[in-house]
Image 1 (cartoon, rainbow, N blue to C red):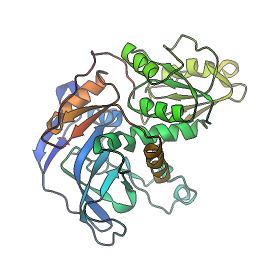
Image 2: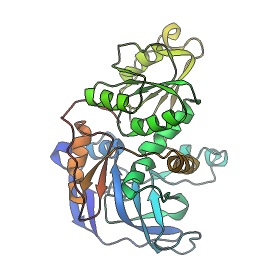
Image 3: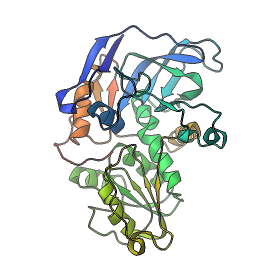
Image 4: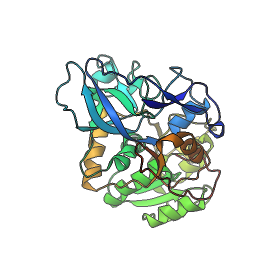
Length: 350
């Protein structure tokens, strides 16, 4: 099979992924083998490729927003059939015996393993997944529409839960990339008022097109304080000004696996009146199942820019340079085409 292999970490503009011919993996016990149809490109992939996150396995095939068709079924698997469409997400294994797993917080499992970091992922023609960690893909969603939901979508959904967002409330989104534009569709469905901070004009324009009540940049002030906020950009320096925009009892959730240092917070300005800061760590499988049901019901339609399979390096570079609207998706078909991205920017948003 063909696969994009990361043999050494390097800046995305150096195109460090190498297209190799590898043996097609065999599914182990309790595993599925998928023929990959689409794999979305995530900022976490970029962090792994460029070295912001240390490698857990070297070489590694990145990619953890994978949609494919079940090709082979390992011993002991129940409930799946050859030809079923399935999804592979970031979280691919938890021990189910630690105190976190036992109390429904498997995303905090110290023994967790992750797709495209601990095990080869979906920048390949085939990929394996433990059957218990595979997701059923709603028939209403095409492979390229479903792929971004498996990380950008589910992490955004987890961030909504961590921020305790309620229907009809006011929510401030910081950064309007892949995850935020999916979250926006959920917030619109819930009847929320949405404010957006973004440095990029094309992101602010997209937010307005999708129903934002107000858009601006950090340092400007929305019409009134927000009940909840979600920070998608991996910029810790933004935490203090965001906290200053929250109403009493407001909650900020930070939806990134990597974050630059957070400056000192002033208690009276940023934390008093029971304001909170919460981090987001991966997701549970229940988060993913709930999101898939919600995506089919709304329905959620991610904005995507598609790339032929052999252009994985270009997709990563475009993500880094902020040339995308929505999510980059690699398509494993001869008819794949690349949509024209917007002009290059410098914003660092999810």
